[in-house]
Image 1 (cartoon, rainbow, N blue to C red):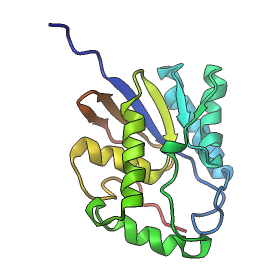
Image 2 (image 1 turned 120 degrees about the vertical axis):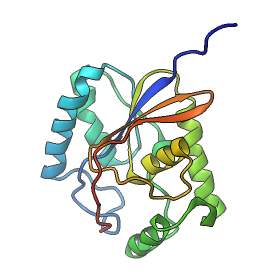
Image 3 (image 1 turned 30 degrees about the horizontal axis):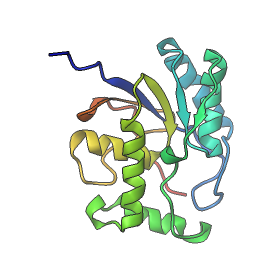
Length: 187
């Protein structure tokens, strides 16, 4: 009987600090603090590579990943299915909606959010090689929850540029290491 193939190791990196909040700009880039965080993350992650890099289409993830693209001479692949949780509201109401969602469980969510969660998981389950994924707070929580069986939407508090490590294979996700944690204000 052949041995199971080695699982792919995913390093899930939360984007660096953006110049504007969730209710202020739909696609903010990084501010000065975020650029410093990205540089510090590069120093920590560069020895792991080069590896393929997946990024959400949003500027804050692409700018965060750019330091690894440069260090590894490896272009990132933009993958919309690891993007931000979709909001049914415009900028003015997004923060209130998100606070409510983050305080709940997946079983309390409408089918649109469950489909988004499933797309995140299906996309990352399909990864077959060690990969860096630069993504968002809720997407990291989706994977951590799947790895630990935690139904809460917020089951960890990944800080900006934290590195959460999971293994993925045909059996699913295994949480290897939770990245740096911090309470993030929804602004």
